[in-house]
Structure formats: structure tokens, C-alpha cells
Image 1: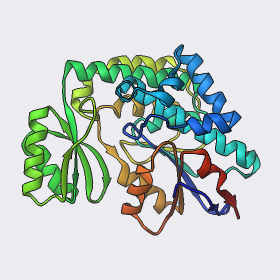
Image 2: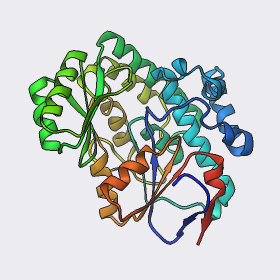
Image 3: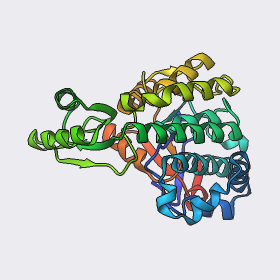
Image 4: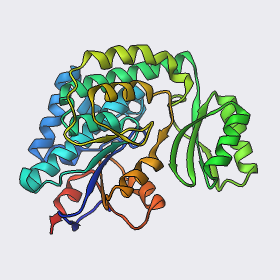
Length: 319
């Protein structure tokens, strides 16, 4: 749900979900900027921190520039944080839902740091931009790509990955996985997936083989960047992409941020863990609604909503 008249049961257990790269689109967040003073401040703070008019690129494009990893990542983070601050502004601190957990899909883990006050907004923006640049450089050093496989279970995808020399980068649902690797190996894996009965096996429009060993050239630089920021203990547990378990200490957070660029995002297990611990409502905060769609494929019984534009925030009510 991304439109009006969304009701929040304030007594239930919540988790906030933050989207990753791929959800970017030109014009995202412009209505937040125009209608919410709190959201506008987020965009201005990030522009100042990065010393560039990132908000202009987000609102006006061109798309070819926005989709570059070094721009898409801070752009998505900016819109997610702007939506969060606009939601907080509308509901007020007293009525703002307090999450039991926060989980970010890949890049979204960095947004989670800012939402849980583990890292201030300016530092988060700089760290995300650095991550994007390092990953883009790694893509140029070791070119690769990614592909989605839909309709095969994890065991079969693992077999295909092993036989083709590709990597499993995301386990999003029971029937949706993402693989990565060099272009030839991924093409072979797609042919094999189709032959094994996949409903869909399609290349993704990405700049490289994220969450795989091909990102290894970015690791040292990212580790230095992560170690240079002033992280605090988050005010709500963050569910780690790699382990699908809470990370609560600064040491754990640093290890997760550095490791996850080369390892698989265990999204399905992350959602299942939160449901197991009593979470009944999920709020996706940021552009698009891809996480909302994944959630419904994992467990249709839980409540979910997407908050990414001003209209969706205006429609929120508490009961």
C-alpha cells in the first residue's frame, strides 16, 4: 500500500524496512521536498554534506547519471530518510511507531544507521557516497552483472550457481533469488535456470556483480571509511543482511557493513526471523515498493505498507 488511508495499530510490533539500489527513479522525493519542511531539511543537509546538488539530480535527472552507483545509493538513502522525517513530522514524536527491529536491503542498512541514530545524516551520506564510488571502481576493475531467477527454490539456484561459477547475491523469497558474476557465467546460469523450469530468468540493469567476490577490490577502502566514522549503538536492533540476526554493537555493525558488499543478502531469513519474534506489521520507507512485494511473497498474513511519497504519509492514521 502506498496511498491514502493507511491505518497503523500503535499496539502491534513494527519493523521498518529500507530499500536498496534499484528502486531509484527520477523525480522521487520531490513531493516530500515541496510539502514537508523536515524532508526538505534532509535533502539540504545531504547536499551540503556531499558538497554537490544531489537533490537536483534526484528530482530532475538525467536518469543515466542518477542510475550510476555513486549517485543512486546516496539518492535512495536521501529519499528514504526524507520520507522517515516527514512521517515523524506528521505523526509527532509521541505517536511515531517505535520499531522492534529495523532492516535495510543492502544499501538500506546504511539508511537504517541514520534512522536508529547510530550515525548522523551527514556522515551517513558521505559513507554511502564513498561506498558507491568504491563499488563502481570495483565494477570497472572486475566487470560483471546480476540476474534474477524466479520460480526455483534455493537448492536448485545453489546448484546452478555452483555449476556456472556464479554467486548467489540475494535470497529474497522462497522463489526469488539474485545471482551475480562475470557476464558469460551469468548468461550460462540464466540458460540453465530456464532449462530447470524457472518462471523467469532475466538480467538486471545494474553496474556490476554486487554482493559477490567481484566486489573484493572495494573491501579495504570501505573498511577504512567505516572505521573513520563515529558510530553509536543503535536505538533499535538492526537485522544484519548476512546473518539475518540482530546487530546491536558498534563492532558488529562495522563488521556487517564491510562484509555485506561481498556476501549474500539473506532477506527472506531476515523477514522470517522478525515474524518469529512477534513482528506483525512492516513499514517500507523509501522509493518504490519492492520490499512490500517481497514481504507478501514471504508471509501474506503480516501487515505491510509503503511510505515513499507525501500522499502516502498524509494518509496515515493511528488507532
